[in-house]
Image 1 (cartoon, one colour):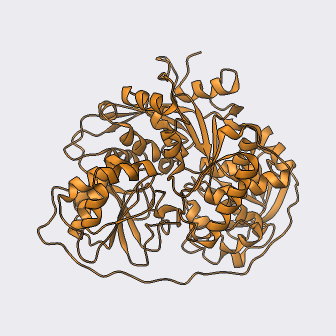
Image 2 (tube, rainbow, N blue to C red):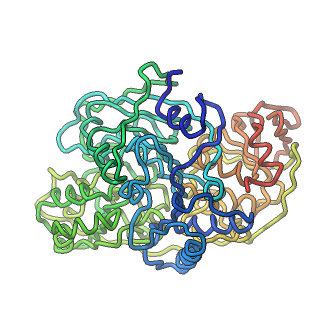
Image 3 (cartoon, rainbow, N blue to C red):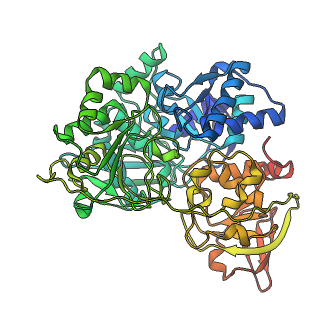
Length: 597
């Protein structure tokens, strides 16, 4: 049977040929947990009385908050350290950097392998032809304990980048062009195989950049079939010769998408949405307060070199803060040996510990209210990197903007830098906590809340400043407090309520809290036109009923009473009914027993 890349990898890890839509048990070669998710993984294992399947294949990575500068993170890290000592699980502590990058460096992934982590950008493993997937705390606990997790085989699409981009265009510009065309849900629930002349020319760092932003388009993963450079890197890292992996020539794809990159110029995503992409020239001259260079998308040694090349020996503009975070300790050491750290510091930049940077609210890179930041990260959701506004761009564009004081490309830096002011803090809203106990009927009846929005991300649902919270009873009060117009939802919701939303609900991070906050409030069910892939898994695994149905077009309004039949998928109310997707056998079994674990 002809197979796509993801079908080949999953087939090899479940013992039989698979096809899209099937749910199978997949063996995981490397299972990882980060510093914020790791504590909940440990607690889930201990609550369920589970051990570790294979400590050699299991690892904690402390990349969100190197140094444990937040007490919550420090406590979580220490809990994981103690568990690692007792169980023999590997630990990559605060010195080592971003877990996914460390796994690539250490040869823990290779073409055709499988990797899971409490990191929604674990799919950067597609850069080396491996299957990587971000998952929630219960999924990772199950992988730690059993060495495998259930997975629904996604359909595959081909994405072909057509043409030759213009001068100065980088991998980040290419993937931003993809995001512009595909949007926040263009790859929703699908695996993409990316090809084209522009892709063939990319080294490992560029491939990581492209693969890392599949999440921002709703994708399960983006594969870039390995070239000779990647194969040599993985062979050296793993200490054994690795072979490439390719889809069969006659494999079947759900769609073939062409992205025209002929003559492409440097691109930038405007604040709030990674897919709101325009040429840099369109927003050129916008004053900025800060620049961040790093993240799992652009923290490689090649990115630091590109930033310094764009700066051309100039210093950071007065009033602008430039923050640089290498992806790993090895990258940091190489930058030190090459003199890059000295050059960056001489230019006025802050160079921090290797790690994730600001996007996890745990390290360098956060911004304040009113602050305008140009970042090389992968997300710029409202509140994701702070209370300011974040543009997404390449290291070259970000560094050029740092020395200019305004947004610009490397070839358009003005002679005189522009200086401007910054902002201050905002209060945090903390509504009253409501908690209830769940019951497990298959027909639910309750009052609805209708949220007429698509692409509600996990930072809108449960903001990353609360990531260190592991007690579910505390989570409900923060539900939707970063969703404009719904900040007081937690104080108005009642146990038994049902929430109706639009498409791509729960896109973004892999955080389990964005599900558990609804359980904390006693919300009976979530109904959406579609869900972010990781979010849907998290909800199913937590035993929270989630149904796919187009309920926004039904005419329902806040306060209406509806009935939801989980077995048939029928949603009904006085005067109407619609058909949703019924629970699958797996979802119903997990729901009835109260959760995956």
